[in-house]
Image 1 (cartoon, one colour):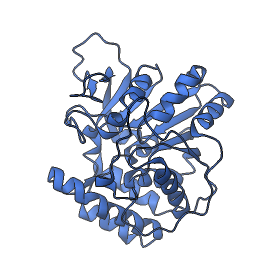
Image 2: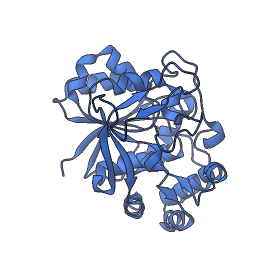
Image 3: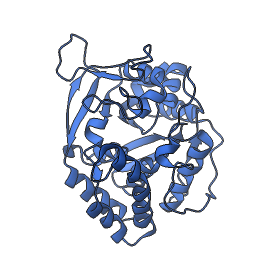
Length: 313
């Protein structure tokens, strides 16, 4: 398998943390060029701090972290402390980071990196609102040909919404950015709630993280212990969905996932359905397909991969 050279755009977030840890634990498959940070689950100051804490937890303080956009394009910022806690990373007691933020803005890093690399060589992994990526596309449309693909966690169809009734959080926070990205023409793979809600951290799966006996394994178990209280109460499920690690797992083992190439449009005008991803799953329109929309996964295989790789850190 060709090694993936990636930029992770993220707003950590407990599930973002696990996705980042999975990438950093897989250097033979994934080369993480940098983390670009966006406001989302919590404001930018907190997400930038959380990203560095995660890198240090992984023993990878050399990872470059760039702070980016602190608000959506044209809308007030909506955050999710009610899900992720005040810090965005509640659960484990992690020390404040020592490693610095890079001075360069995240958007400039994305543009500069893509321009410097061969066409189709860099994969963007989006775990939060798409503000940084959309802003980069607007400022430098010439970078589009250099993007191998964008794999993102966001949206929903059959599972509808998890913040307002009709929209998933990442897309709802910045629907204008999502609209720009989905209309860009770049190859897109979408991990919507339809698939991430099948990646449930049940008690046996969380016990397996804790049984690793490492700082990483214990911290991940503590993150999901905290994270699951909201989703178990909301959905009545046996555990919390690990949304964002589906993005990283797709790079490592795409055979764990199945979906279809369809058209996806983003609602940007109606406040009733703002941020809705209108996915033409049944192909009932003539709109051209623009995204591979994932609908299912092998959950046991996903958690086997995750536990094995986290055990390396």
